[in-house]
Amino acid sequence: MLHFPQRLSANHEAIALMYLEHLPADRRQPVLDELEGRLRAERHGAPAVYDPLRFLKKLCDAVTSGAFVENLGVAVRAEREHARRSEARLRTLDAVVPVELPPPDPNSALVQRVQRLRATQAARTQKP
View 1 (cartoon, rainbow, N blue to C red):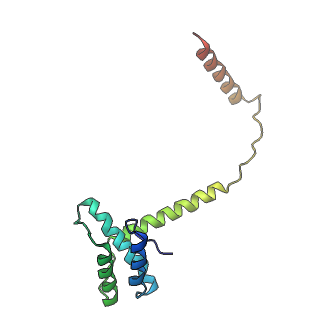
View 2: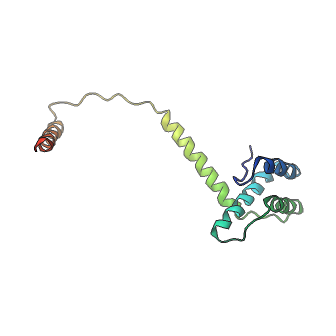
View 3: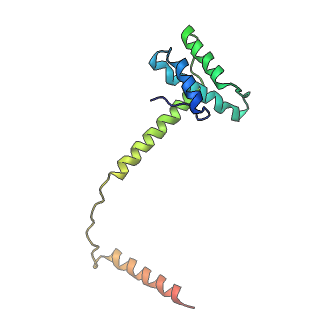
């Protein structure tokens, strides 16, 4: 599954697929990541990309000629991988079955101390 830059419309994605189909499968996502990285760079002062499809075409031509070098897309890929790992960890945590703990020992000094603290706190909050 390819991850397209958020700025591309569905129509742009369809056109982008026509450019990408001429590239080896393992180069398609890096090209899209490079485009996303370049579009994000605008927020940090890079000149605006007024025609993202033209820029994508130039990236595809660079792949074909052997001149393509990943640069801005590296951070985009790293961010996506980090999000994927985080989601996987959350799914793992969601799958954890809660452990049934035994009731606290009422004769424990720690339990008695907590009960006294709770009683003191309750008495303080009830005073007018």
